[in-house]
Length: 239
Image (tube, one colour):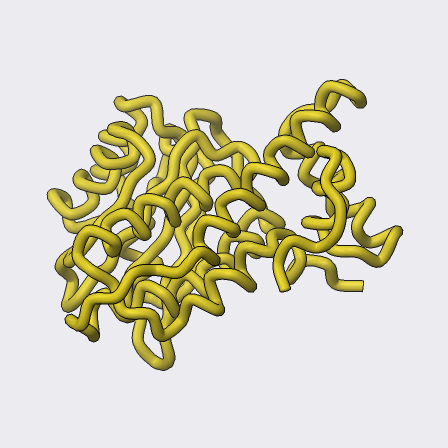
């Protein structure tokens, strides 16, 4: 059974936001919230960022913290890095260790390592046939990300791109509906559930993430339902 589409029900919520038109203030808020959601979704991530890119130039950007913002800025200053490569190739790009020899982006890797950034996972934001930007997570540990986290971030990027594509194509303002708040509440529930498992089983964040997935598979439920049960909630929060 392939449980990865249920790794986080946020994807369903953000998919339903497709077509909404955003004010400038709400656009920036949405980008920042998406970055926060990506950071909290991916085990091992200490920060995350979202960049909208048009013809090689950023048009909007969101970051969870100063470290991410500076690591992103370096890519544009040096014209190289995993985020730009994910956008230009429309494919996921992972950097396992910025201190390893024979770096793909030697200048960026050296600068990132000096800032204590050791690994990065970037995925493209694709809407239709257009790559509108990239989403990425960073870690201060080498080898923090793997194929599982890459697939999870890639799946999350699909509904995120559907939402963010309207930032570049529309000007008519309209507020995001309550689904975004519901999605972020669910994200918090999953984070709480991972914390409970870490305390109960004496495991780390990544192992807790996998335990949630395993329990969902065994009970044929979504990860969201398992998280709600662990944290004292009931029912399925997203229709």
